[in-house]
Image 1 (cartoon, rainbow, N blue to C red):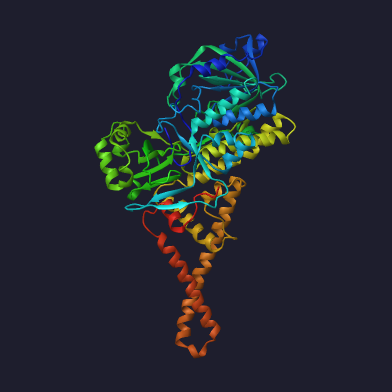
Image 2: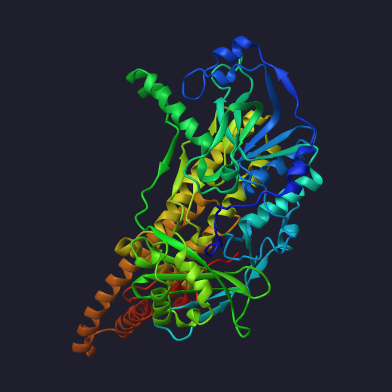
Length: 603
């Protein structure tokens, strides 16, 4: 399944014999004996002892990574580069990714999610020597073309002044590139284990003198589970698990959040066991996964299509209908003119259901998006109508910390989940790994690095999600939190570029800015814009009043007063003139950007 403009991740893959043979050829991990009394009496994350600990042999690894997506595999490569003599184990409950060079595997363009990598993601890949290999599998997107409701022709904008061009590829092809890099260069120190579910048993934080490592249970999952990440329940063999110990656990398992959920449950039990006074004075803030209610929920269905030869194959196409019943967005899937379109619908729309009427879908497209309807054949449309709906991820973040003690940390989509509209999910996840690598270089120990990363990125996770959520509010609230700020930014940045920054979407893409800095800058912009509007409005009122007096008593007033009055009237009128094109009911962000000639990003 492909995705929107710039996207996070979910994917089903096919288990390949070649990948299995590579995995099985690696040397078995080191093992050591744990005294039975410790195994019997250790408390698990739910506060209970477990029979699974009655096991003498424990597989030992220096690092364990839960999650084999882009952030998880990049973390493994980062650790292998910094600690080449140490063992890294990666567990993922899905199957290995297809070979990124296998054209047959990637021929169904509507099967895979597309992600766009901007400056943040590209800088992260470049730091670990992987950007050129990823670019080989990408399509470069140089601009976009947007159709407003009822428009016969779209507005095309080519961003020829950007510092970094956005590159697009299927999310799982990126995983494939990273997987291939590990197999070819790091097989001696990185062990990939697919089809496993991880459960934390002990985070090693209660009594460091007794417990120096993190302990986990790795359970083999059923082939059905390994083939799909969309199942509600995971079927794993818990009767014969493998116990694994590690000096550092990195949770990068996306929205599954196995490790994060266990930490939250553990912290809730800790708080509950405290007396109220101790809880109030000494407990600190409780570890929590903040889950926002999705008040602008939409489903999506993916559509494969080939653009006509006279259409550009290197831009993003988008369109929407009146009142946004249908929103359509398409990105190039390859350099052969194949695109993957995403049809966004409201959850209660009749077309959003599985096995909806393809004739009704065709009629809606013909009436509202005829330029796209003409390039989608009947067979593809029947398959789209038959598809069950898929849901965008809801906004989530973890805080106030991203660690449990000094041996477990959380990063990527697991720490901050956003909707994929503006490419912040994958890029910020890769940036987490880059920042962790920088912190490891700057600190004296892994424990210090874990705590430093948590302190630096926990607030960033919260800011990223809160800003992104403001860009996705429905109705009038969305106009106030998103559309109106874009209008103001377009006007004020164009008029006073050295004072006011570009729109928030552009700012979020800038690698050199933290999300905290973006929030702070936009807050100052809003204060400045409001003050100028108040002063301008008052000046306009005063000038109008003065002008009437001046005209009535022209001979009794100074020339400078008359000139100032008319100058202020001119400036006020010019501001109103600039605002009028945007004061259209139902205007969408893309329409604002087109009218203002603003860039969606500058990366």
